[in-house]
Image 1 (cartoon, each protein chain N blue to C red):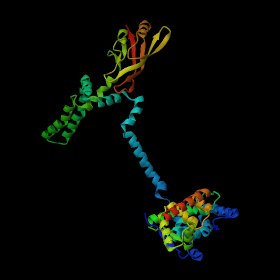
Image 2: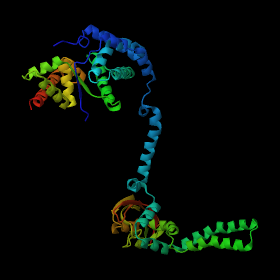
Image 3: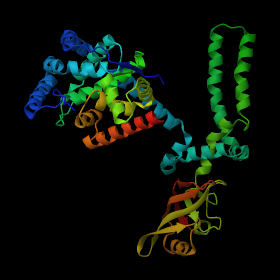
Length: 188
Length: 260
């Protein structure tokens, strides 16, 4: 499994990021480097979960507006700044689903579906693919989020844990249970 | 719940395209223009806070059950009697009115004075005699109605006298020792019974205080007062009474001069 290079950073990079945050707290115009660094990452996270590209850009902007206006509340906890941005993004995303009638979308590659069916020890047929897609839509939001992050976005358990504010081990257990539930639905 | 839409193999968005959509200037200006929500501003907390405080104060002051505990300690005698009589049957008010009917008449006669003066001023306006007479009669009508003891508002004022404790009708001043030791003891009215008091008197060894439970002066104390206190002051203080609802009340003190 690949590791997200933007998320996982060296301690030097984290210190550099912290200095940007400190200066952004004093002057919002200094938020620029953080915006440039994380804009794409946050946009992809949002666009992965909705089908309207323009709306995804709009929601991404909203995430950074919220982040800038609340930067004084941010506390460094030894994890990348993006984990805080992801939490804002999640909140803004759900608000878009509510207020802007955006549709919750799961973007999945055929390869990911194939890998998952293989894990369930079933044939890679179009029927099974359709069945798996059907099962995905039956999952609850929490399980779907874990499946998405782990199997479709290829995030590490550590990253999932930091985004969901849980431990790495907890993320591992939850992701496994979510997969088990998906398998149970698939095998019905 | 909305059904989730699934998209397979959507065309990926290039990083270059995403970068072209970056607009930090716009985000910065929007962040600067972003005002805090109304409920986070001082303008909200000022009026809303005041309204909440006003409602709370009103709720506390309007609730009669909350008033009672605060009143028990320092309640005035007049207010207590008024509350008592309001809570009880009209018989109580009639009894009090009957006892003090003279006072009522006195007070009502005082009230007549402004009525007569007002009729004089009307004469200066050059109204016809018949009109004046009619108006005078109209003005006098409520005065006539007020005089009888049926009006509870007029009756309530004189009731305050009944709140003063006494021994066989002695409220203060000289009191024979025999009356001081009356079997009826310290009385008040039918609604309130005296349950405890302190009595201060002179004895051979100097001033003495006895805390008594009940409403009668004990024979031992009476004996000492009779022996050493004739012509001197006897103070009955810290009088405690209990009303029909079991509420303990503080009552006014009695000051006597013991006589034979």
